[in-house]
Amino acid sequence: MPKEKDKSTQPEEVRKIPVSEVHPFEGHPFRVVDDELMQQTVDSIKQFGVLNPAIVRPAPDGGYEMVSGHRRLHACELAGLKEIPVIVRNLTDDEAVILMVDSNLQRECILPSERAAAYKMKLDALKHQGQRKDLGDGPTSRQVGEKSSWAVAKVGADANESERQVHRYIRIAELLPELQEKVDSKEIAFNPAVELSYLKPDEQKRFLDAMDYSQATPSLSQAQRIKKLSQAGECTQNAMYKVMSEEKKDELDRITIKSDVLRKYFPRSYTPIQMEQTIIKLLEQWQKKRQRENER
Image (cartoon, rainbow, N blue to C red):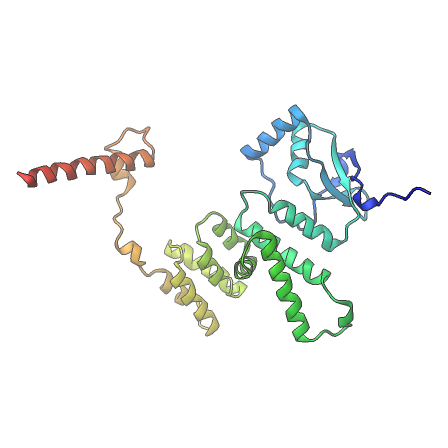
């Protein structure tokens, strides 16, 4: 009697389903934007079709939930395709979260806020998924700690990050959306942002006002001092403004020339980079001239 083939080793079936029946993953932390890369994906799909099938799972209310392939789905919509090739998998919520995060972390350009939310989602899923049956309904604090430590190590290993860096990224997820946007735009550096994440939500709101009023971005030292103010219960608007209004060391050594002063010496078509390059070149010529004069 012939042996039955192991289904786990058989290739998964690829089928085409209507684009209109696919819904985004709930809580999907990665943005799908209409940028140059998206246009390249659209052009590729128009020419070659979708080369790699997306992965979906059946949705409870009908249709399908996208797990891996949100950008491909959007590109199909922009390209005018009515169907998208997919692999349908019956996944638990935790399995779906882990697959969704892992497949998106392969991308090159990921914003800090996206990575922070993704690490947190995967960590929570691993903790839930990794619950041992022998713990019963009341695991000890030691058992909970061991499970949490294992989950952090797993997230880090899969993303090629240290456990400390995983913790730091997850701290970014504690920031208000407005502060996360400033981290994504690099207006606030990563290390100061981690320190600011320990502020209470109302303190973070007051910090935004202090930052706006002082027209300054926090250094690591300033963020650490503001964090200490919060821990001491002294994180008032005035206290934060006082810290943010201090001149930083690098600012004391900086020379600033207003753009309207420089503009009268350059053609209107010159960009700031061209202006800077020209100034450096002229200064180098001036320096060489002075050296020749001193050698006489």
